[in-house]
Image 1 (cartoon, one colour):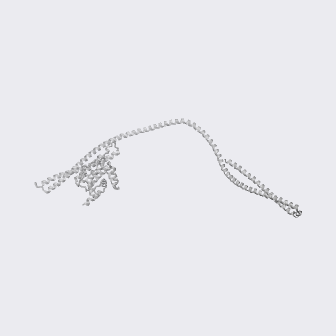
Image 2: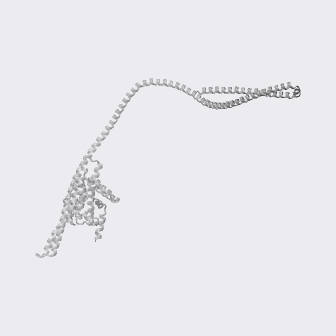
Length: 500
């Protein structure tokens, strides 16, 4: 039996809505069971504290802190919570809860049953809608973001269910809208028609339950009378008293249900009348708006025609202004044209002069280019001449050295010639002495003196010829050197002049 009770509670306590409620605080101790957490939700104390965090303007003065598994206290706490939720939706959020409100009697009397868990889920769903639309919604949404991915997705689906589904919560802010469009009125009328149909069905269902309960009440009133008629007078039995107590308890329950259902029927009837009046008002407003829409359409057509004509005239006026400004601009340009014409003639003359100067400069550039080309050749020839000059200077130095050597040889030859002349004179004198003193020796040695004189004379002749040839060569070398040096120096001077 315990497994049958606790097995679904684990699923309920692990649901996304209960996981979201845990972000406001722990439901039980660390070692608490799923039953303790669920009973904390069912007692209503924790949920009233959550509602106080969502709407700080509300109070928890009438909330019973210690329920101790008392059905009446639990029902009272849950009724206070439902009233706070309803007040917050209507007054703060301007929304009407259209879905069936949570049945606090089922939660209070049978909290562990499946209908009880469904009603608790309704309360948590409405609390979630309050949390994500209150002033501190950023804080509560941030808490939701810290949950795991699957839980966030499920909570997001529940948020859409309670904020965007018009079958659960109906937005009353459309009552402040003055102008309605056809696209916004059609879904509004459709939703109101569905709500009216559902209210009528609920009204009929509650009327049937009231009739059934009234018949049960009448039958309960007739049963004690029939039992009193059958039993002997003055001797009531034990069975009669037990059945009477049981019937009285059932009767009290039935009366409570009848009062509650009657109250709900009255509320539904009032809501039905309000919706009906609102629907009639919306229909009249819709007809008025349709008529105004027709009038506005006709006015819009005529205004569109006038606007087109106005646009055409405006474009023409703009074009006229532009043309006038262009005409004035062209007149100013016409006055400027004469000045520009004279200026153009002056510029053409200047251009002609510039062209002539250009031609002259081109001719000068050509001559300078030719001279620059020749300059390269002249520089090349100058370098060659400088090299030749250097070579000739080297040759001149060599020739000078040779001349000095020849001069020295010539001096040596002159000295040798003088010595040979002195020797020849000495020999002649010796011959004369020999001729004087010895005639005999003259006869005997006549042949030897002749030979000596012939040898000396031939040698003198040879030396004189060599001396003359050497003198000629020296004079020729001097003349050639002077000619070459003068020619080279003149050529160098001419090249330097050309280069400059």
